[in-house]
Image (cartoon, rainbow, N blue to C red; front, side):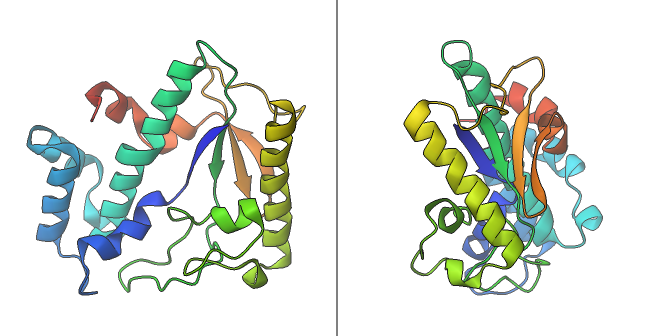
Length: 201
């Protein structure tokens, strides 16, 4: 099993602005440059204009998610699936239970980096989350997500209905509070047609 969270980069907004002040356009441009490299900055910013996202913080978080986490995971899926069975997933709870405070220039932290841990282990993660905060729908999501990991550990397959990752399809199993379903749009949703050829290190 290999996967990511839908909003990984939102956790790092507070790292980009430790003072808690809203991220300015200039700071966003600088952060994007550090993430993707100077030669790629202008094209990356054109793909993630902050006015489209409402705030520079959300634009940076989305760019960081796609470039550093989502499309990197897709590259790993493509490489490993040539040799071993791969089960690709995305954890996507738009209002994931968390003990962390969302920066003011983000709508919420969403499925930020590490937010899926409490769902997978069904136990408190100190400073991050606690299953006691789960809604009934989140409890069902946790049962499905944790169950998939347990089945994978025991049998090597997370579920009989979960197809192995195939590069041609780009199939990713998406875990949400409303259910679990296969998506064929993961690469498109995270603009991987742009990020993969860059081969960022």
